[in-house]
Length: 494
Figure 1 (cartoon, rainbow, N blue to C red):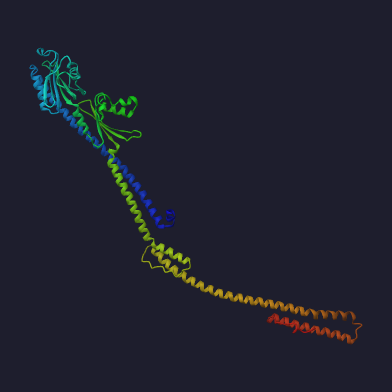
Figure 2: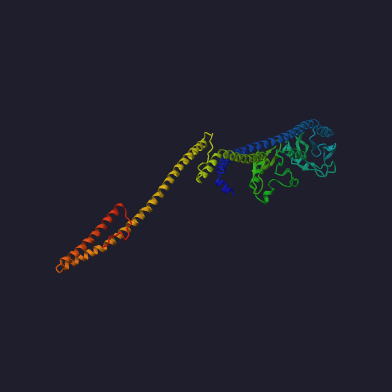
């Protein structure tokens, strides 16, 4: 089991500890690096999107400015030649020829301003495959009621009209959605007598703004004055939906605040957080010449793609580096601890009684080298000590055997001595008994004994007394010199 290997291997434990410390340092360092990298990438992405948006705005505004300058110049010519109505067709055509971005031009006048022309007089030119010119206005198309004519007339100032699509007037067929820059025409009394309108195709706006892609998956939208979508990647939303339409079914304060900020002519960006969806960054800015506002919608994955790529590369490099570090630590530590393993094996041999195990000489001067040399000295000292111990043990064993032999001999001598004393005691019992008996007889019957009888009894007492004396002398000799072996035959008879 790997756990047992780690538990039993100092190399594995040291390597894991080193790797754990390095991982902690890596996590801390990479965490700080990723945090500031993310902020830097975010700032860079915001700057890139803002610059892209401003570049697009500048391009569009330059075009709008060119349109306004061309319209102003044409207005001056129209007012200078207002008494020659037929020249209006030339002017209308000329402005399209000199301005490639324009799609159409109308020079329209008040009803019956030219009595000979009737109620309607509008010199209109349209640039398709070629430039076509016609007199615009009839009962089917009363331009006097159209926004492009009515609003600048009432305001008496230039005005950009919301995009619209002309319906069939029976004349030049126009299928494009257009927006118009309109400004009033004045006579010599500074009275509004007509409106000069130049048209831009909304497709041009859409193409120009849609090309604004700071990131691969970003897209752009253009809001009109009321919040309607003039440019949107989903064409079904154009003109029929506003930015506030989704909030009618489900309130969305963030979307509402974005729409209000764009309609108020503000600049900036907002982050949209959607549950279960990717965050989106919306950068918005208004047009200076109109009340429109353009926005770029960027997904978080696009914005942080450099950061995510950096993160993936760093994580891959870190993981590979940690594995290499682990292998390097195992190699270095195992090589450094090889003397310890050798010493452990030597210690195992010594513990098994193999004191002649040779410890190789170390050429290292670190702690391990010092330990190896000290272990070699300890091994020699231990071998010498064990040798002395073995000699002492053998000597003690020999002496112990001698003592055991002596002890057996002493025990045998003590047994013989005890038997001898018991034998002597038994042998003295009979003479002593005879002496006592004779003594009692003499004490009780000495008055009746003759001299001969008395002498006989006394001689018998003396004879037994001599026997007791001999036995006592033998007993004393046995206590001093060891007990001699006496048989019953050697004992004096009572």
